[in-house]
Image (cartoon, rainbow, N blue to C red; front, side):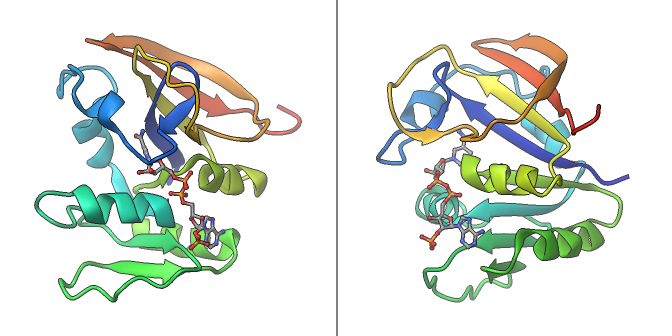
Length: 179
Ligand SMILES: NC(=O)c1ccc[n+]([C@@H]2O[C@H](COP(=O)([O-])OP(=O)(O)OC[C@H]3O[C@@H](n4cnc5c(N)ncnc54)[C@H](OP(=O)(O)O)[C@@H]3O)[C@@H](O)[C@H]2O)c1
């Protein structure tokens, strides 16, 4: 059954990027790509992804080999981005989150849905009761300010913790009302 998962890396003080959208605090760190909660294992189970406009802009600017995602993607934005010419399955949208989510679940065909970020977008899915899980790899650094991990009150249940080299990795289940 499809699960909707916010999978991300964070600083210890709960930021996923600096105020200038830099990930330098993250990208230089040691991680075992076959270790606990690694990306390759996670992405293999993902059938659709969603991200916000800043995250998309970051990926466009920094992805060395171009768009790497093979599954359908939805980018939430009001601003205009140039149409893609590389055939990537990317839909720009400002439709309501539940409608887009329903399309994502259908496209995922039993695989999981990944909310790439940012934090507020993940929060919008949580607002609608559509977020199931959050997996965070915490880097051993604080940066004082930046793009927030999840700027909401959401209750979680800790399901799993593990060390992956420099990272403290944790998997949380969203606790829904009445649970
Ligand atoms: N540490 C990590 O692993 C990780 C993971 C993901 C992202 N990041 C980074 O974290 C930063 C996140 O940036 P961010 O906090 O600004 O979040 P974001 O979600 O990437 O971008 C926010 C923008 O998305 C658009 N948006 C959000 N919800 C929308 C909706 N319901 N409908 C239409 N548009 C919507 C709006 O764009 P408009 O201005 O066009 O309205 C909004 O300003 C980025 O720098 C990204 O690279 C880091």
